Length: 457
Ligand code: ARG
Image (cartoon, rainbow, N blue to C red; front, side, top):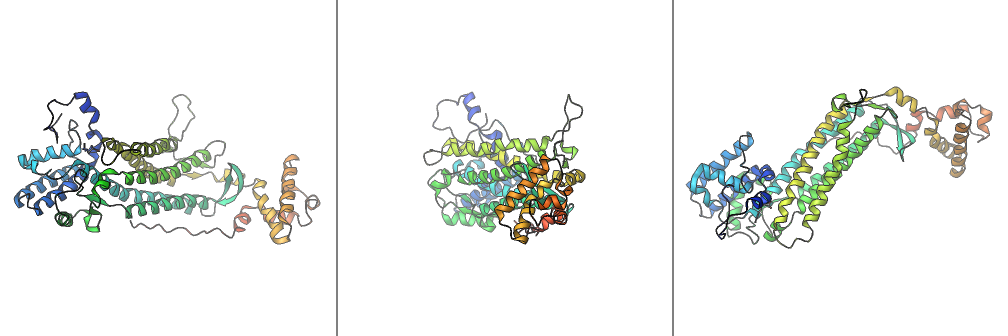
């Protein structure tokens, strides 16, 4: 157990088991860099207020920047015997500047620090996740572009429905991820990093002190992201900004999971439309022939964890009396877990998608299924021959059923046979309508415009 940030009023040492139970350093060390940000601004505010001498502030800032560089280089080793990251950094500064470090925590609280650090973390992770989403979209466009003219089977109820372009199928996921990106952008626009809440009632340091400190910190305060806490009570009380982030990540996860599920399905021997990149699959220890889609299964499986993280924090926060409560320490593991999972899924999925190969001969064979063109046949009779839709629907339904019952392809039926269903039906019409090219080109409302990926964040 290292030095603590509290203890004066206690007569007894903290119970060892309880200390282990309540500490958070084992996960909140990930906030180290953001905590340094808080300390840099706070130290400057103390200097502006005259609480720190200029020379003292310089020493403290230098020590903080040194620690920050150590973190960047991966050379900062958190002491896992500390209570939390705030304590750990405080102790690290003390090692560098001695007793002067004890002046840094004046007029601030960990309640303010943790709210600041977590908001900073969310802003930072937004900056990582948006490019990762864009990268995945680029991979989807790459695969679509390489199979520009390829037709594919569109499903409803997992039953063959109508013919689509494979590229249009992929664009659906691009559209989903575009909306996710927009959601994240809107989230980030409303997300600010507040400082100066004290424990709950605000700080004795003035607004002017803090504003000057924020300005000169040169952190992302430049673009107005770091602000003085408007409502200190609210600032230390709520974690809605994490819940909102976890909600958006849950939607991204839902989209990734559906993509994974489709790819698993289409790569089965039963479908066999696509070959998955072997480097992302594993084998069976017993069955020599197996190539299992483990990456996709893990993506799909992670949905339980990611939704769980959202529900976990919603439940933790429900019914908490204002303002800060220690329950809120438990927000970090769900947050880090969802962010890290989504980051690695997006990264690997972008590589994975690019390497998918289509089994074009299998797809072509499936496209020969005549029932895929039943709707186009009915619509042809309606649009070109003014047949009432209900009548067209019924007679084409009968034609399909008879063809299946008699095991005779519609394309093999004679003009006489076809005429029994409708006088406008004949071999020529059947050959014109029942082909993939006609099916996709008969649809006039599909925009084939490839979305421009806006890389700006
Ligand atoms: N580890 C704490 C958390 O994450 C930091 C704030 C602690 N504040 C306190 N008064 N004990 O919530």
